[in-house]
Length: 154
Image (tube, rainbow, N blue to C red; front, side, top):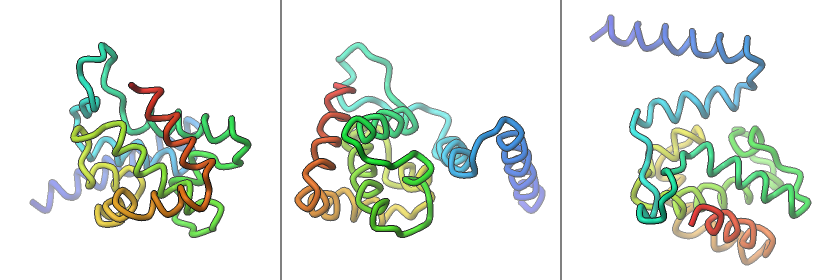
């Protein structure tokens, strides 16, 4: 067991070094590692009969950020994945978690989404069940961005 943990730690260090040499930010590297740890299977789309391939967590986040930019929000993917608790980032982060769950449905567990964001599954559960609605009421643009992102993948 100890050698397996050492192998995992070594692989993680190698991935971080490769990501940095490729010019990736630490947040993007963390997202890539989190998606890898969540499993090698791609999550299923909420409606598999739509004919599109199942989106990944990273693809949903990229569309979410693009929609945020369309509505003049200055939030980047690195901000959503950051550990910082700036008010300008917390709302969009919470709504992004709920949007990922809405798009992927049962194809992505709360644990997988939490790992992608560098957070615990209970944080994602709170975001999906209560916080996203509260932020959507405070900031109608966030609710609109979420709806547009979900529609993009349907």
